[in-house]
Amino acid sequence: MRVVIGIIAGLAFIPAAAAAEQKAAAKDPNRIICERQEIVGSRLATKRVCMTAAEWEIRRREDREAVEKAQVNRQGPSGN
Image (tube, rainbow, N blue to C red):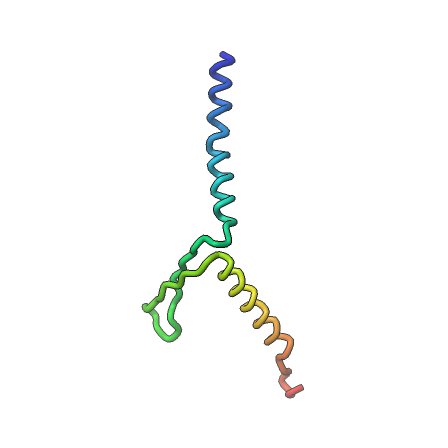
């Protein structure tokens, strides 16, 4: 009975180990990530953009900063 419990307990750690490896690979800044992006002005056309995880992070940060800057510099209805 102890052997069976030991085997079952050992098998429970296999998926956990695989998940840990995937998380480690997911944090690799040099892995390539590809996304399909819609082309503005077209309902059907898309283009595939591939960059490293680090480049995607930089792009997201720059986009966020641009939006924040536009919101801060936005003028009111009276032009102030």
